[in-house]
Image 1: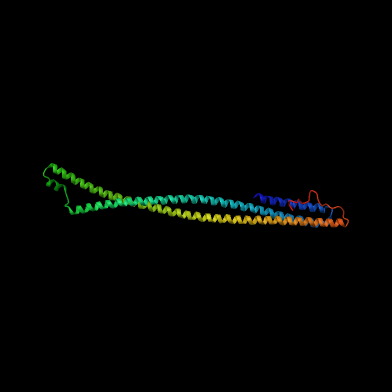
Image 2: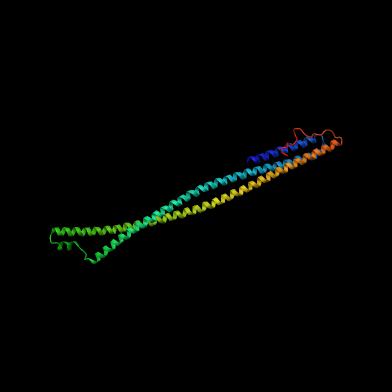
Length: 265
């Protein structure tokens, strides 16, 4: 509860006590005032209870508003994390797409080399070990032709293996990019949900603030009403006592420790 509202309730309680004391002392020697005294005390008690109830309501609303504010702060932290994660994923996606472009370029070049080699193999006669042996004039030529044949075979196998490896790498890159895009979509949904929750918490806090303002206004209105009523009660008592004095009723009690302080009324 805020200090000013605490003061209002404390002041209201003091006003009720002062009013009751003033009326009671003034009416102690005047039995004709008892009905007025009882009515004043009852009304003062009701107004005091009303102010106390408003004070409790304000305290509850303030606790709810503080909880909403704390929840909004928590959601904002989550939003910041989700935003950072989304940014990181986007950067990672860009890098993955660049890597994919590079791998695809290497793959295309390897496919081109393999295609050229296949065309050359198709056009040239198919070499075999027996043909190499029969066409060789001596051992050195035989060894040279065998080495060349082996090298060509190895080269063809390397090209084919490179193409297969690059094809697998391209597929892996596609899978990675698909996974990153799925994560980015999830983060976007998280961001959207967090923003909606923040808006809801802010609306709740705003609503609580409006209710707090209304409750305080009602409490202040009740206090003002109490001040006016106490002033009226005191004037009525003083007037009646004065009338009875003027008609020979005796001394009047118009002051003392039970008079209403000027700073309150």
